[in-house]
Image 1 (tube, rainbow, N blue to C red):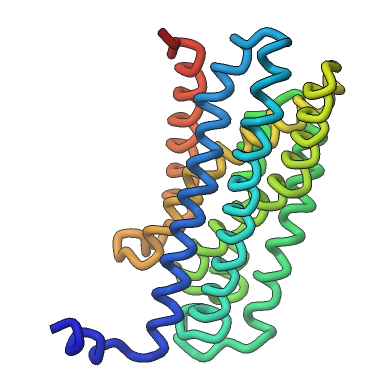
Image 2 (image 1 turned 30 degrees about the vertical axis):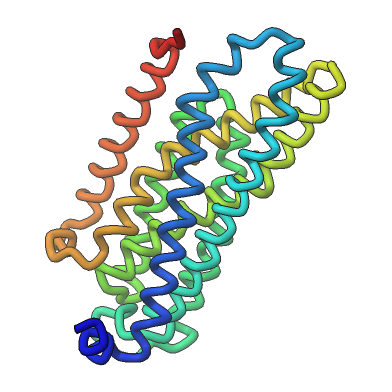
Amino acid sequence: MVHLLALDLVPADWPQLSLRWFHFVAGVLWIGLLYFFNWVNAGFAPTMDAETKKKVVPELMPRALFWFRWGAAITWLTGVMLAFLLYYHGPFLLKTGAKASAKDWLPAFLGLFVGFLIYDQLAKLLSKSADLAYLVWAALTVGFGCYLFGALGYSHRATFIHIGAMFGTAMAANVWMRIWPAQRRIITAVKSGQAPDPKDPAMATLRSRHNTFMSVPLFLAMVSVDQPGMHLDQWEYMWAGAMLIGFGLVWWIYKQVPKVKGF
């Protein structure tokens, strides 16, 4: 039976299946640790005194951050590989179903990196209004999707996955370029018994909070792109609504964090 089922699969399906598998496993590792940092460790860390932090932080955080940052890297890399396999060299990029050329997919691919640069500046400008920065950024990603769908003729599926990819790229860049460098300096300071530079905890907390907000619509983009119910004429309103619902959910969970106590 297994042999017969295997014969039914087109050889080209195996790389896609393997990439999807690794993409989701790495994503669970990454986002699971993101939620641990924001909703578990954030409530636990303030309960430690200086001497306890000096013992716990240098042992716990480097281990957790190792899996955190490499989970982010593998998730992003396998996501890009899937994009090339299914969209840039596959049949799902354009509404017409025509084979895409570089001029079709390159604006979207480069847009992911330009998007992080825009987000990064926005996060700095609105560093004292973390939630507002996210909401503005979310609105910009919907605008990016409208450009892909309306001006470039992308399919619903390709539009959704690229909105998710814009979130994922910003999140992965946050991990490697903002959160990890700041955390490394914090760990070094705590280990030596010194107070960290206040800019580092502020940076790590802000970008980690943004990543937590972005993770919810990112998951929607990952799991639902091929669902018929997502292919609505007014998809942009649906996506804006989904982002607001996700924002409300994450915001509510943050409010519960201080209420969850240890024994």
